[in-house]
Image (cartoon, rainbow, N blue to C red; front, side):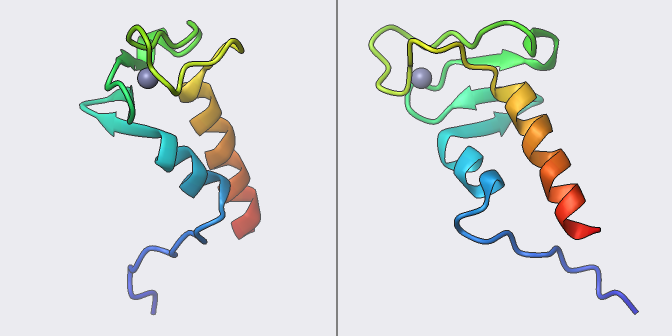
Length: 79
Ligand SMILES: [Zn+2]
């Protein structure tokens, strides 16, 4: 029988890499550097960091959609 233990993600997995940059607090994705956050409803809006955040980039950041993509990859890796 399945023990119910989660399958540990490798340190180098896309999910682990996502988790190094982002956190999830109360259904919001938050930047680990500046703690700016946005909600599930904002998933399609570019993430806005607090002024001067070192994790901000010129490229549009969509952490919620990125997480969804990573999760899909995790799922397909399991099958
Ligand atoms: Zn930030």
